Length: 477
Image (cartoon, rainbow, N blue to C red; front, side, top):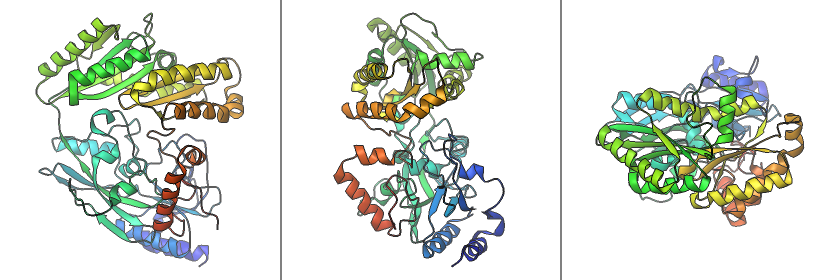
């Protein structure tokens, strides 16, 4: 089948207006961080699961590669076409319907193209909480969140996206539809296909729908900002918070003062508590949710902070007095990546290490980088509650940051990932492997694990058309 005939068949399936081949396609062809610009054969925008199945079946017949895409907000180049002009970008953003809210089962069944914030808003209107929360929640889609097993700020209480999902609807690489949307909390009938597709980054099939967990809205939600003298003190505070708050601890973020200094410099309108406190190397943002009452939550929260002050792991702390103040504190935390971008090009890392080993990892990695590349600046922040740091590296204050990136990015990545491996961690905590870290997976994952992954890929996608070159190397034809 020639390309014109293929495109015409795709137009017949989804409508001529939803097969894009000309004009400005940068929104689909360029990754979120603007590191890579590919070239698509076409951007195809199906409006239903059946249309997705028909598109996949048609492409499979012609061995045309498919790149599933949600909001295109990923950070590992996992949903961007390559430069060949031969891949079809399958954009699911038209599939954005909340199909059903089951109040008694505490579940919500949705299309994969639903924006994450729309799930949050729908749950809130129905009297529930959908706890997945990310910086990109206004534009990322739940299908993409599932495809990368996204984390976010409340993993310490509710888990990654995987833990929030009870069922999937998937179009296979052959164009068949698997309906696994039952929403059962217990279903021990063979291999767990749901968990197989979650986190597979579109390399095994296309997630088209999902049944997600809902939770009762908490009676109270309190936020505190604490200054701590060291990463070791932050970890000690985390342990105290677990013991004092139990399941009420829903968020625990750590931010280095150097990372916060970028926010001060580039976003001076934001107020940062304890920004210039002597001896406060880090700040911690804690969130406590309570099912009883605000008074009960505040008493437990303030009791924790008093104990931490007595212990010395906290130098000072403030509790938000209103939702608006809490939002302001979270806004500071979420502004760090934007402020870092304003500072200039930087080398990003999304790593995880057991929380107990993070202080030793940070001390080791900081010293290693300063010894090997004097003057580099460490921008360290992230989700300490679940052991996930965004341990980023900025060029020295003097010199050309773009030249530093060109000359030293590979070296910096090697040093950081070797340090992560030394402390038993992972080079990808929540951003996925995508195309950016395929070589890292080959190096740091065990041969046995890689062999099993390749066997799964070959079994479910024997033609190798599903998001080739992501997670695993593309098959050689």
